[in-house]
Image (cartoon, rainbow, N blue to C red):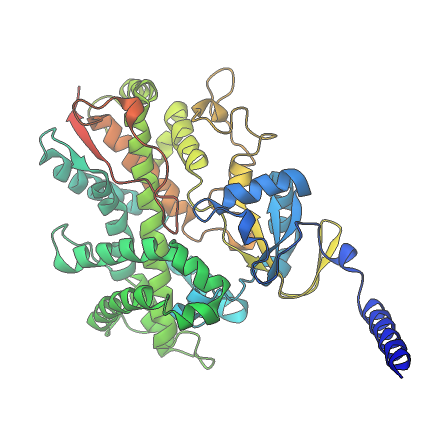
Amino acid sequence: MALLLLGLLVLLGLWGLLRASARSPSPALRWPPGPRPLPLLGNLHLLSVSQQDRSLMELSKRYGPMFTVHLGCQKTVVLSGYEAVREALVGTGQELADRPPIPIFQLIQQGGGIFFSSGARWRAARQFTVRVLHSLGVGQAPMADKVLQELACLMGQLDSYGGRPFPLALLGWAPSNITFALLFGQRFDYQDTMFVSLLGLIDEVMVLLGSPSLQLFNIYPWLGTLLQLHRPVLRKIEEVRVILRTLLQARASPTPQGGPVRSYVDALIQQGQGDDQEGLFAEDNAVACVLDMVMAGTETTSATLQWAILLMAKYPGVQGRVQEELGHVLGPGRLPRPEDQRVLPYTNAVLHEVQRYITLLPHVPRCTAADTQLGGYLLPKGTPVIPLLTSVLLDKTQWETPDQFNPGHFLDADGHFVKRAAFLPFSTGRRVCVGESLARMELFLLFAGLLQRYRLLPPSGISPTALDATPAPAFTMRPRAHTLRAVPWP
């Protein structure tokens, strides 16, 4: 009897294997190679918590530009290097335009907003946002005037320190206020209680989103819920929402339907009052869109400007060459304009190199919207895919000295600025950053304007080489807290 039962079990096992092989292609043909996962842990033991992108780049040396990792029990495909990332983001169209359901962002946004939404809600929100930003003058001369007005306010703050050390984070006030002016139709005084509270909350949220506890929550949401790992960030997000709803309610009587709008919020309210049968612009999704714009629009540009000024203090030779070029082309009295980028090749190259070198947002996952052929593999619908932007910005086949801060990456032998195809800090394809043109203009005008006015120096007694350029732990690769000196010149 025992032998009969054993024989039946063997036959059932063989039958199951035959059915599985007939149902779908073999795993080797369907999924890229990758390290063998451990039960429950997957490949987490191979990944650094603080620098996951660098760990994934190391794995790509063994498994190639396209490989599979198990983040806990979640099978994920990683794309490493310029060629693999570009092929996926540009060549797949809508097939790789979705986001996977990341647990913490599902709780925060409920599938709404711009950044982590997918499908019809994402397309509607993105198209609306692009259209409104254009109507508000993004990329046009009046917007440059507003940036320069904010630059003057920032320089007033720096002047108040009289050459004494100021906190690096102060530099983030200007780009944040530019974003708020677009969103709410007004800039805030730097001492305004709401402005200070909002910036403080954004800072806390970004730190919490990059914490190991939130990473654990996203990988094991059942365990994270049991341990309440998500509660601190949800409390802070709710405080942000309270401020956003207050600002929304303050503008609850926008311009007449079809009339010109004065802010992104006005446009959202107007859109929600129109023909919105599917509720894509109901209050909850309107708040979600504003939340995304506030968080992304302030953090990325603010952190990049801080990095740019920190690196100028760390590399005084580079700073000196930028200031020499600014003095020669603009002179001491004329403020920069967007069109000056063409006649300031070294300044432009330095700013591009800052963005390449810092790899501010290492990776944000995509998700296949249908069964997708990619790199010779067939990925099932719903597969999370990580396009590793760090690996593009540090790709040894694209950059001569990828691990060094080297503005020469963007200059030819004659000192002319050179565009590089692998310069993708804003990503590419259908999910390219909606605020890219605004961010580029802001960064150039603020960076050039500050270096035209000040020498940026470490605090007295500290060598430039001693300035720490390792990123702080957060959702983005933001700089650590520093103090610098801004000394007016010439």
